[in-house]
Length: 282
Image 1 (tube, rainbow, N blue to C red):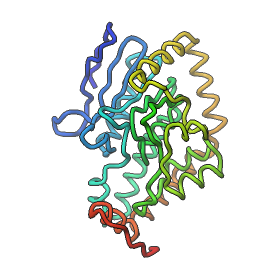
Image 2 (image 1 turned 90 degrees about the vertical axis):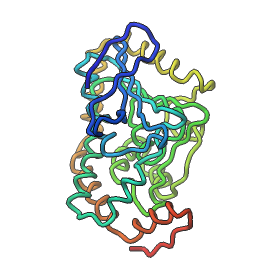
Image 3 (image 1 turned 90 degrees about the horizontal axis):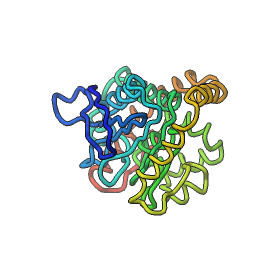
């Protein structure tokens, strides 16, 4: 990814390196001194997550460290933060062998672990819906700020899928009871509801000032010792991440098993055909 440092706050976009055959990148990285801004960039698809986006987001995070950023702000282009996994990608995977599903699940696990254990402070500026995997990315940041129009939810059960990898981290964030409510119900929370249960950090009353508030927080973090922040994050990772790899591997395998069920195929078909799914419990 080619990086250019900016001296003014106006967003000058840098295209990320990705495997999309020369098309516009699904992730944009801007460096402005010590603050890096990563933008999920598929606004026409509500920033739905594809394998290319996961790879480019992981690369952008790596480049933030190489570029000597001290804080990372993560947001979405357009009116959504991210609507979750790209439905066309999921549909194309129906019937694939378990080995391929496992590779895909491990890709997501690797990305979520990188975000969870990232050495720099991270701030999500959630400008709209953050659903399913998009909700996971938003709430794995150290700080999650949201506009009043934002919403949060893990809706995978509605299409016969399970948010396996995300559950590993969510359990650590909000506890067993709340995890069960969120993941089994598929309920979508308003920004204020998400704030009330501790899923996000703050609702920015004036949504138009969301990024300004994110940069205000970023500048506040920059005022702290980078060594102290880095070591504090490392310590929290050690305390909260016990047996994390084992949990992620189990989650990846559970994800693979669910992708091979008839309910998963039916849920995707019903979604695309705009009808109620007929579950078979398989």
